[in-house]
Length: 238
Image 1 (cartoon, rainbow, N blue to C red):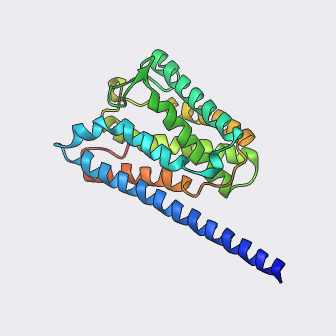
Image 2 (image 1 turned 90 degrees about the vertical axis):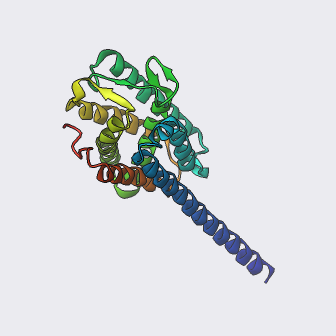
Image 3 (image 1 turned 60 degrees about the vertical axis):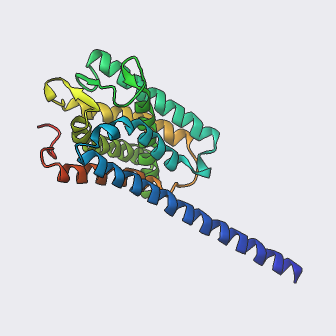
């Protein structure tokens, strides 16, 4: 009898913990939505745009914290992946900015904050979080390590494709002659593949329910911004 009560008590505690995690997920998703709704309004109003440009690095750090406020990231494997993704992504950007050989000829403005070798440090964070969320989705939806790596890299390319028109309009970075070369996206795919291979060999943690929303909310933000600001094209090659 006592053993049965003990089992029931344990089951109730597990159920309560699950409910709390679900509530936590909903709160984190709500925070992401609110932050981006405020961002759309701020960036779309000319009188407030300079202020929102100023806080863009803080925004990127905040949404990264929301994504990573997750028990499953507390592992050695995740730490190895995240640091590797940061270094590889940031390193590729430095080489790209300096040479024009990887992504094309472009430069970062001062809006994204503190730079090392002409690349904002927050860009490394953006690479790592985008790679993490993309691989989480691929891991959840597909089977087979090779397919997962390819899908994750493609998701990263799609994310870059969506962010380009907004980033140029918001003056986060500038392309030489306002032209984005096709090999920019090929390079994103190659770098994404490398980072995704590392993910598949290091991260063994549970699925982070916020990962799909981390990318989805940002993509919706880019699309809505373009719809509101009719002078911004959906085609980043324009």
